[in-house]
Image (cartoon, rainbow, N blue to C red):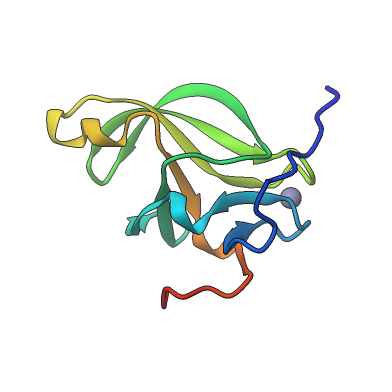
Length: 116
Ligand SMILES: [Zn+2]
């Protein structure tokens, strides 16, 4: 697969990057930092870049069964978290179409103002 890294318009914008330096998400895309990933804390974000999606599957999470697809960095193929395709519980529907990123996989770049 010939994937190219997306050049983001705002280069000085606070962002999350992968360890391989691919930009994964901007600070502005952060919805919540109070999430759990598979191995630790996670961030919920509206949108991401430089990720490719794996296979969809149903997964039982702490908040019920969700249909998710793992997402991988296109730069180094590391698993960065997952995409919420569908939530079974009505109270969890707001997650649909958003991404859960594993905190330990991310590096914060460029003058973050938020203390997270
Ligand atoms: Zn990477």
